[in-house]
Amino acid sequence: MTTWTRQELDSLGAAEELEITTARRDGSLRRTPIWVVRLGDDLYVRSYRGADGAWYRRTTDQAGARINAAGIERDVAVDHAPEATLPAVDDAYRSKYARYADDYLPPMLAAPAVDTTLRLRPAD
Image (cartoon, rainbow, N blue to C red; front, side, top):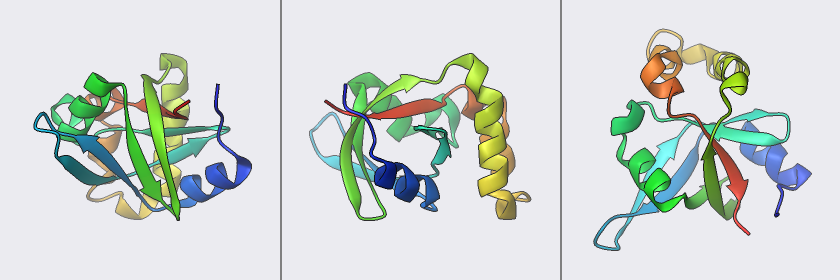
């Protein structure tokens, strides 16, 4: 299994957001900026719009996507975050994105978004 390098974890974890690229049904590509948090040696993302988020639906349907941030571009596989990690992921979002506490952060901590939490893994 491929793992993140320390430099990738540091850079992607510190990025304000990453761009996730998914393929539409017609094969065209869609790029969407999303927030990313690091928890130990893992990177997590979630959908602001919950399961209705187009990038989320395509990513889970295709079991992966391509990400780009901080000069790093990688194909990734995804899996749903273990339920036991969700409180720590919430805390990581609160810490990293605290300056958005009045606007964008509350929906990212609400059940519809939390239920879409994905762990990113470098694709083999």
